[in-house]
Structures are given as structure tokens and as C-alpha cells.
Image (cartoon, rainbow, N blue to C red; front, top):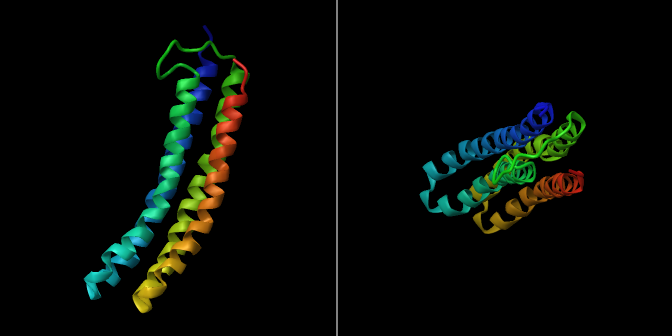
Length: 158
């Protein structure tokens, strides 16, 4: 069996989880830094800023989901392992790129947007939902990338 196809597929799964996870970690960290300042002044705002901090974490989950779907499709999880050509393996790698790249970028951008929402919450806590909506708008693109990766993986002929 030529293992190059499986190697490409596993690299795709790893990129999906890794890059989207980095985006989420960076985004959650950005919001956490802003939120810590607010909570140090007014601990009663903790729950409001925590919601904002959680938002950029979804990209990492989406990347992990695509990695699991891809690994199940090729049999790494739940076997038997498919005999993939190099071309099929590259197709799986490319299928993982939408969520890998968009997850990386949108996680960071969503973190910056949510951090701005923390600023809203600090000054006008009654307008917290506006910051949440602004940050959630960035999420749209991560969801579109998740959908694209899922559709491509499903469409690859084995």
C-alpha cells in the first residue's frame, strides 16, 4: 500500500485542528486580557465578559470537528484505513484548508472584536449584547468555512 495518500490526509486533519486551534487560543487570550482589566475594577461584570471571551473558542472546535470527520472518513479513526492515492490524500488535505485558514484568521479577528465588546461592557454594561452581536458576525465566516470543509470531505470519492 502506498502510504502517501494517508500521510496527506493526516496532514490535512492536523492543519485543521492546529491552525483553527491557534486562532481560537489567540482570540480567547486577547479577550481574556481585556476582560481581566474590567473584572479587576468591577468583579460583577465577570459573567458578561466571560461570554465574550468564549466566542473565539469555537474556531478551534470547528477545526477539531473537521479533523475527526476527515480521520473517520479515511479510516484512521474507526478503521479500516482506506488505501488512498496521493491525489485523494491531497484532496483531503485541501478539504481541510478552509477551516484551517479561516479558523486561524477569524479566531484572532473575533478575539479583537470581542475585546472591543469588553470595552462596551466596561462603560455601558446594559449594551453588552451589542458587543456579543458584533463578535458573532465574525463567526459567520468560520461557520461557512466549516461547511465548505465538510462538503468537500463528503464529496471526495474513495
